[in-house]
Length: 135
Image (cartoon, rainbow, N blue to C red; front, side):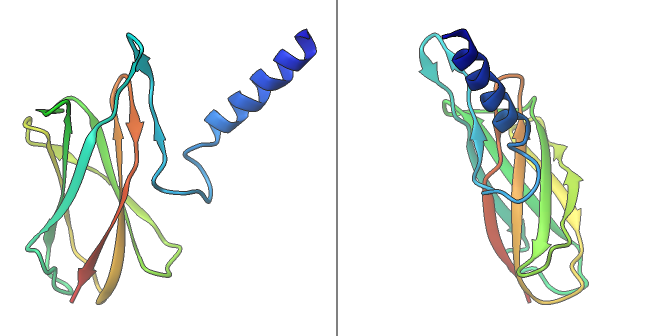
């Protein structure tokens, strides 16, 4: 029985260690149980202005909360790329201390873009992906 447990532990470790690397589903989430309940953060994404313009700086903002309360102590990175492009750029978000995390960014071509918001706290890591347009 011990060899089976060892194999299972190695397999699980391999999956967890590679979860955030390489080609994968960007809606990935790692959660830990606390007192028998699974925690999850609520993450939303917005741009300002709502319609970003080519070669003009805009703001990408992630709003993070858990249990209806803002999460102000997370590490947030926003990874962006143009639709169909393999060149991804990741920038650390600046906290407003009220659950908002912003990145200033300029895009040099129009089109559909994707943003994966990587949110890490001492208990959780979530990375939902959102779409936005640059005109």
